[in-house]
Amino acid sequence: MTSPNAPPTREVLDAVVAALVSQAGGYLRNPVRRSGVTCAVCTTPSDGAMFCGPCWGHRRTPGVADLVCALTYVFGGTQSGYLMRLYKGQTPQEQHQVVLAALMFLGGSLHSGCAERIVGRPFTHWSFVPSLPAKQGEHPFRRFASRAARGLEVPLRAAQQASNPRMLSVEHFQAAATLPPGSHVLLMDDTWTQGGHAQSAALALRTAGAGKVSIMVAARWINPGYGTNQDFIRTHLTSDFNPRICPWTEGLCPAPTTP
Image (cartoon, rainbow, N blue to C red; front, side, top):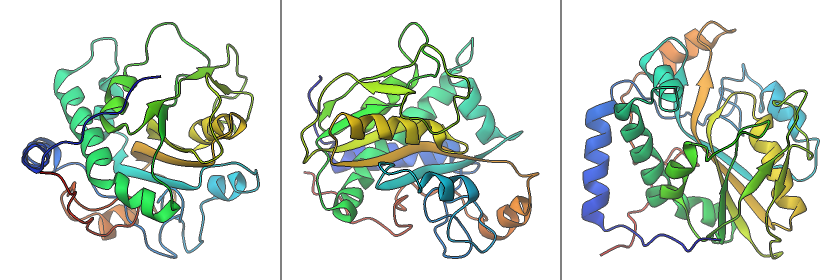
């Protein structure tokens, strides 16, 4: 397991915020947390319900994450969707990797404290969701997840076979270490579509002993052509991306206590 990152200075945070806004603020959008408008777990449009269908189903399984957030919305067929597809393509695009690196860095540096306050425990460990079924080599997202890390890394091993990778299953992943009961793991993934992938990883961490699990995904994927999503996008997502808006609460986080 690896050691935690040193906290960044305020000057570094301000510089990364400015760079991310300059490069991607015009096409990224902050997630919306509104009762009756979006799912209380994953912030997808929920058509008046407290939870979307997939998250409602996941809640019936003991051990899913205590807390979930997405750092931004992304949409198929748009620049934001290309960001999440091309950062790990056969020919990775450097400009997309720079944006994703900044997004994850700020997600961890600016907003981890809010998750810790909500859950009531500091982060002690971190992990990321590997590809399912298992693939050889390091997943490209791990490098970006490590920028948001707090505590010690707990690697997850993916199953060699999975008939339905998006289904919620405790058999899809296995943690490489045993965790103490008081642990709080920051579990990261690049994209949330229905959530079964990340929540299966959360179940693996619980099996390994994790006391609390908070999931932070880089992007909540929304299909503009599904249901009333286009109306939601047109009505609620009218402002440019602001990295300082908390993805856990939709409020402005207190300034980090850094030099």
